[in-house]
Length: 267
Image (cartoon, rainbow, N blue to C red; front, side):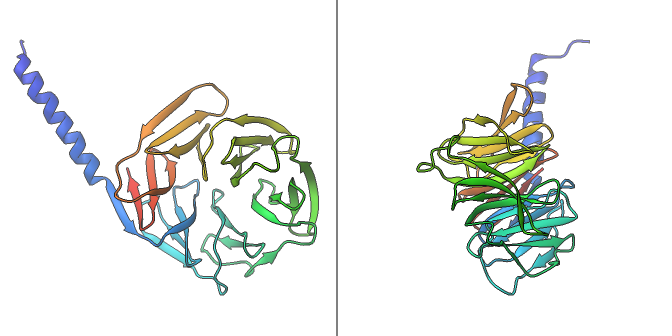
């Protein structure tokens, strides 16, 4: 059976049109206030803190499930929700942190760091339920036990990063590795004992994430993926948005974009 070239051309353009139509129908936009921190758990639920200090929990379909409103308004500097059963909330301005359960109910209003921490520039939850803290006072990375308020590990950073030329913006532990983004030089990688491993040379980042065995981050209009254990890389062009993109999350082929006014889910 012969199929004409004209038929193939028409079919090709119909296929392209169909794909574009499906793509446009799979974009969901939700109005939000300007976000200051975002996270996603392993089930695809979305967590976003806005400029008012509120934290919203959306399920993977974009439906708002819970909202946390603290009694004391403060800017949320970092969110970590990957483990689902708890969300870690860090307030740099208050030098404090909060733990929320899966219903976004605080186990206590706020915990303050002890005198063992000079000034916490960044803090995040470790896999062993302790905290990783970048202490700006003595330019060190510390593992902090919030129960007894003691330091477990203390790693001076002066031999790794020039302490006059740094801008640490985000940190997260993943697969027994700790990643810290320095906007001026790249992503620093440590093992779970605080030993420095390497630097990923990508500057200008304020956030990054993980999907499977890949680290991802966005710059300009592109989402970049780098394999943690191989040398493979890939990119995804982000869809156009009317507003500046502040954060991007990626999970199960779903791209979640945060602008000043919108949460945009691309399936």
